[in-house]
Image (cartoon, rainbow, N blue to C red; front, side, top):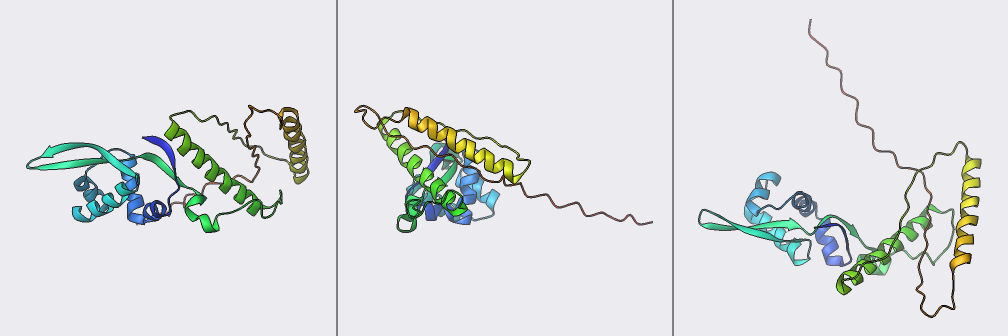
Length: 207
């Protein structure tokens, strides 16, 4: 099972977004199960679960993990093909974001368009590398920084821009015949805080 895979087909994306099929994917990501086992977990008839599983299997979202005999019946054990899924903008080709339409480094929507392009491009590269049975050379840096003030944040952005631009200028060689282009993406945004759990309701003791 892959840790994460990218869904590029629009029909597969639609199948994965169905609430019940998404629930089944989550169950099968935790481990192989039969339609009968899943029916008990999700509260649906086995025939209905089988219908959903066939749809997921057609689009490569689940696969056969094995079979087992149970009485006079042979059960198919299914598993998810990945622990998690990301839907590529390719699945919405006609309306996918295009960061080239406008460039505003301080725009959150432009950042979103750049991030969407990143998902699209890396998804395409993963698919190609898998078909060629080759490793894909990538790198990512993820970290958090707390700024004391807006002025510190602005200074950080300016220094970061200068540093990365200098590195690009230093290593970029547009005349190298054997070279390969790489895209560099650096993003900065406020950290999204997890939703706070509701406070427990106090229970009054009867006297």
